[in-house]
Length: 155
Image (cartoon, rainbow, N blue to C red; front, side):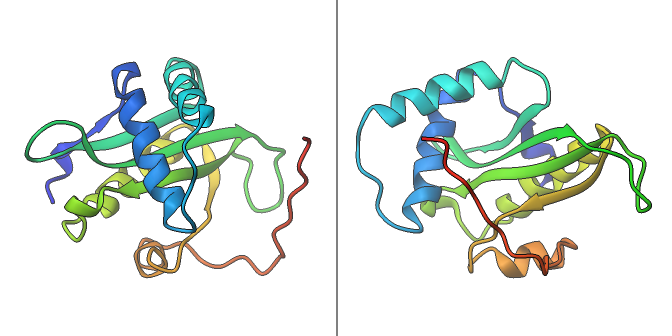
């Protein structure tokens, strides 16, 4: 995989980013059609023009569309004894179209996203790994976090 094939996504990529996000979500369980797809595309279009958000993509080598994507975001953090850098990063929506897997695209987009987040001043980067992604993320230096993950839904 040539790292030069990775590029930062723009607003015109929003529909393809939403399509790849669905592929990522479907890897856990099938997702239904519905208005969420349109909302997802609109959110990508909006977020791609704002601060603290970037998507890195590889165009499909043949034909149209995207082969692979990863999204990076970051938020302010308080300094601690381990780092005084101002931000914490997260990587989301990592997906590769099944037709383009096993070609190094995921490694290239994750690496580009990590480099962008480090360059923006992030002290750490988190992601949620699928079982298929664990070997890649481990190889790139990610380590499991011993604290339990929890969430609260505001809905």
